Figure 1 (spheres, rainbow, N blue to C red):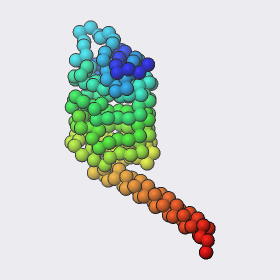
Figure 2 (figure 1 turned 120 degrees about the horizontal axis):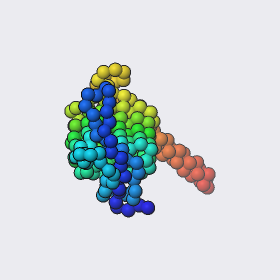
Figure 3 (figure 1 turned 90 degrees about the horizontal axis):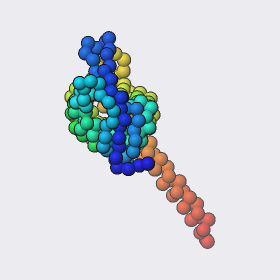
Length: 221
């Protein structure tokens, strides 16, 4: 049932990693009730570890939970959130309003969803992201100014996204600079615009020929 409210039912735990000296307090979303058409979260339900609260949550994970809409205003509930991971949630779009209050977000991973468009203003409220993965979505169009305001970006994975199929890493394989990534996106956009124009020209020519042919047939002379 769709309403204007969204509840996140969560499990909270501390993630101890051997690779990272400090541990991270995680909110893992088990279920979403009352999925909202505007994605607005009303409640976060779940028991915290002793001595912990929403303020301690640094990482949010949603895996194989049907969302449809991005859970908006996460940072209102988790003011110290640094990392967001959404895998196979059936997301169809992202909006800049999804990231309101997201100045502290450093890592965004949205994998295996159905997002088709990424607009230029998408990260206006989350300009400090260092690492983005939109791997295996369905991105057909991406604005070529998306990353213009992002000064800390070190990694962008856009692999397996139709014609947008790039990866930028400062170190390792893929494109080495953000400038190269922007140029690659721009080239795809130009190619798509050219193809669209050619299709339109073809359509006009075809209709003109048909009219001319019809005109000749109709001509009584």
